[in-house]
Length: 85
Image (cartoon, rainbow, N blue to C red; front, side, top):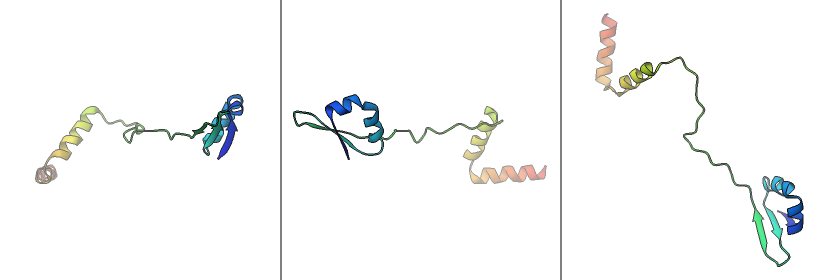
């Protein structure tokens, strides 16, 4: 842990923050109080995913969803109908 006086931390704030990215930093005030600075990890949503480029139309996507929601028996019947012709 790196330790700074209040005056040092104030004069070199950029350095203090750079050190705090790697380790905890303590700042001691003249009156004896001690403060800690630690880097907080960036929060992100599990749903925050990058987009993809596709040529699929909205209708194609909706059709695929509808097809996936059909029961297995219905899907198999549709496949045999397609095979016939």
